[in-house]
Image 1 (spheres, rainbow, N blue to C red):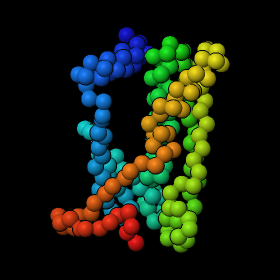
Image 2: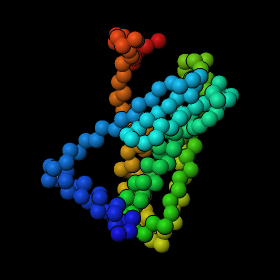
Image 3: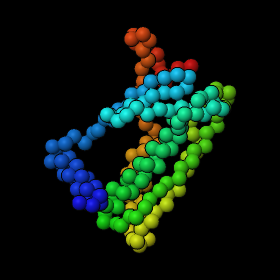
Length: 182
């Protein structure tokens, strides 16, 4: 079976299972992280080997791996590529290659609490998608429309998402309003 056939079969089976109510439509993704040393963190997802996140030297890190902000850009690019591949397979559109270049603009003064009027996250994120395909432009336009409307990372970045958290000190819950913590 080709990878295109595997993708199509898997997605159609997932859709069918949800329609039959054999499968739950919600998926809870999880990650566990911990500070290792300095600004270097270890991360675990499912049963995969531990990977690390660090900051560059000019921000006080050891520069041993990508930082969190870079991983956010990686998440957007790879999610786009995955959704392109999945929908191209299901829609019967030949897709020889897809790659995404992603760039984020961050004003570090927000993160460093130097200016409260500056947000601490990205002010602007831009991406360029390169597609190689023998399909006609109209088929690719339809594919792009589907991807733009159904890429979960892109959707998450484009709309407000409720994020809640809690803090524990030595195993005891601290009663902190994280939305208004100052």
